Length: 288
Image 1 (tube, rainbow, N blue to C red):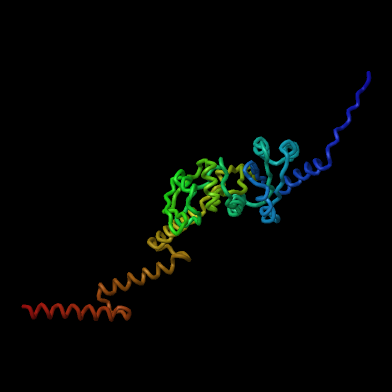
Image 2 (image 1 turned 45 degrees about the vertical axis):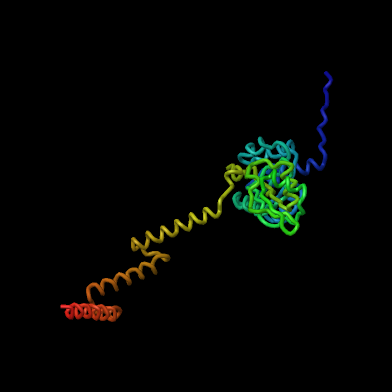
């Protein structure tokens, strides 16, 4: 029997290095974030790489290679990320808290000009004021966008703030062109986390969106309610003791006045009340 010898497949050195790098980074960091690159421009990654240089590793990788390298990495729950690696993707390896990472990425988003077919990321408002544009065919563009205008000093003025597209609506070619002429960049763009795997737990994009201001107000309200409860219950804490003592002092003064107790702190008020009472009696006596 003739034995066929199989030669081991030789992989390009670049691919081997990437394979090893992915496994090393997966073992080095406790969180792996998946970013979909279909609406992200490469120029937006450059500043982020600098910002995250000390806290994260960003790697653009082909899906098949990522699946092969990370499937055997031993990372708990890694299959949840790998099964969603379709299209062009970016992997971020980090020890940063996923919510902090999301807030950092949100903070570093920029506004770009709109293109026909773009989806409005938030309500697009064309502000009132002088456009600096000369009247002419552009007036029909304003009318089509339902923007009220007037002509003053040889230029087109927008009469009032106008919402031309609501968040989630598709921007037409004509509207994109008009916004460009007005110098309005309405599309908020940047890196969005599709999902993050941290210690086996998966966070999806909707899980990571926090209304920080709402949370701050909620905490402030809870603190205020707790402080009020502590004061009303006379429960002494570092935060409530001053208010409790102040209220007790005020109540003591009121009790002393009502009981006509001649304490040093209320004697003046007692004399004033007595004088006022005496004047009232004198007036009544004169009337009679």
